[in-house]
Length: 347
Ligand SMILES: NC(=O)c1ccc[n+]([C@@H]2O[C@H](COP(=O)([O-])OP(=O)(O)OC[C@H]3O[C@@H](n4cnc5c(N)ncnc54)[C@H](OP(=O)(O)O)[C@@H]3O)[C@@H](O)[C@H]2O)c1
Image (cartoon, rainbow, N blue to C red; front, side, top):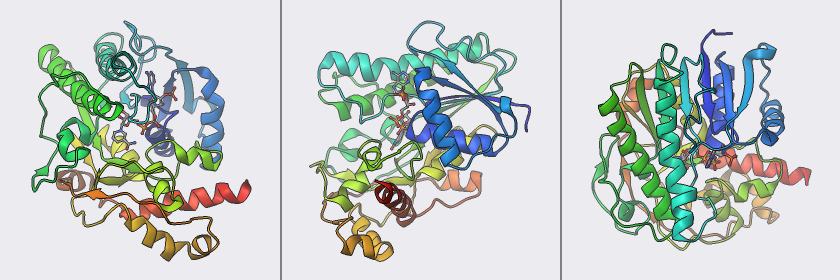
């Protein structure tokens, strides 16, 4: 087991859990900061389902941080950590409706949580913390109109692109989410420029993340998280009724990039593919090719629709620095369907 301690947030969610698995498998000691300790048994059971055996009883510990917007939220949790993986943030799937909700449930936690972690790294983490890795998003630098607003562009986006701070308050949950990621990135960079901390900060920008979610214990688990984007197509479920940018990435690649970002020097790492000639609805051909029996029996009706808005993002620097090629959309789709069918067969 390695001696370095990694503080990870968001381990009760899609990306955080897979990153926790990879961190433990890489031999790191991990302290997982979770909102409520009631979720600890779920995480432990999912680790067991994912085949993770701890190298020692003290390889993994949990600490409760009930409110990441509170002053000093992470001051205790960060003590002795060498690396921080700050993944927790409200997702675009968060249920909320009113302008107050958008501010209090999405924008506030995203921005204040990020700044609280940076403050903690400079406070009680000073002397031990070498790097803070923050989970951003392509939504932090791709204009909303090109991501979810139906406007096609020839522009190729990269991790050095930035958006101005949003002026108008968000009118819906998707806009609120995108604004939260842009604001968190901009505020973090302003904090770094102002405070010049002795640790380095790396932002990871995943695109829509798809892959087996071992936290799910039933097929209902595939109606939440970004995995529903694929499952809705092959199950013929709820239609999003918006053009969705052709930017997806395998969950394993996102987790791999988070682990690498602790030690590889790249200011912004982009998790997503540059060659993007796929459409979301290719999921139907992938299902028919790889799971013909489930399609024939109607377990996967393959009747959903999801129109695609072409989007090009440039992850070549990330692939070069990390020395790997992103997994294909086919691998993403196979990963979630395979797990869905395993869960369906147990129901
Ligand atoms: N999935 C994607 O396609 C995608 C793409 C780009 C970036 N990201 C980013 O990746 C990160 C994780 O997303 P995900 O897809 O894994 O989402 P997720 O499955 O919904 O997980 C979100 C995680 O953040 C925690 N969290 C949310 N709001 C919180 C709050 N107010 N206080 C404390 N903890 C809070 C959740 O804790 P609880 O379990 O307690 O709710 C959970 O652990 C986020 O920063 C998201 O913006 C995701």
